[in-house]
Image (cartoon, rainbow over all chains, first blue to last red; front, side, top):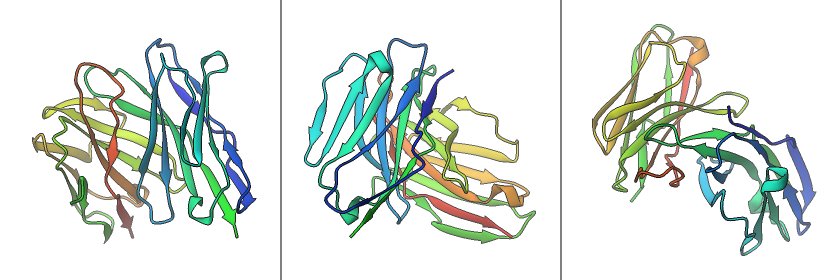
Length: 116
Length: 115
C-alpha cells in the first residue's frame, strides 16, 4: 500500500529565511505521481505542483523549488526567502492508478509558520 | 468563476439529522471526489466517481451516500449525523484520460459541525 510521510509537523522560521519541507513516499508502482498542495489559514487547498515518476528533474517556480529523488523516495519542497504569506499547512500527496479514477494519498501535512 | 464549488460552506446541525453537501465543477472534468479532513488536518479520500460511475468507495459508514446526477455534479448525503462526522469535506475533480496522475482540483471545503 502507498504511504506518504511528512515527518515535520511544524516549522517556524523568520521571514526571508529559506525553508525545506520534507516528503518521503512508499509505493510498489513504477508509475506514480507526486503532488504538493498548500492550505492557507482560509482553508482551501491550492495545487502547487505535480511530478510523475519518470521525471526526476528539479523544478523551480519563483521562490519555490522541488527536489525529486527516486533513490531516496523523496520529494522535498524548498521556499527561498520566505514571506509571511507563505504561512500555511503544506501537504505532499501520492497518486496511483486505482482502476479508472485517481485518488490521492496525503501526508499528514507540515504547518509552516513564517514570523515577521 | 469558481472551478469547483461546494455548498454550503458552513453547516451546523444536530445529531440525528440528515444533511446534504452539493458540489459542482465547471472544468469539464470527468472524475469527481469527496475527501474528508479531520480535526488533525488529515485528508482522506471517501469516494470517487468517473463519468457518473462509482470507482472508489473507501471504508465509509453507509450513512454517507454520494450521488452523481451528471459528470459536473457530485453531492454527498449524510444520514443520522453523529458527533464524529464533524469535519471539513472537500469536493474535487480531475480528468481521467486513461492514465493516472491528472491534477486534482479542490473546492473550498464545507465545514460541518454536529452538535
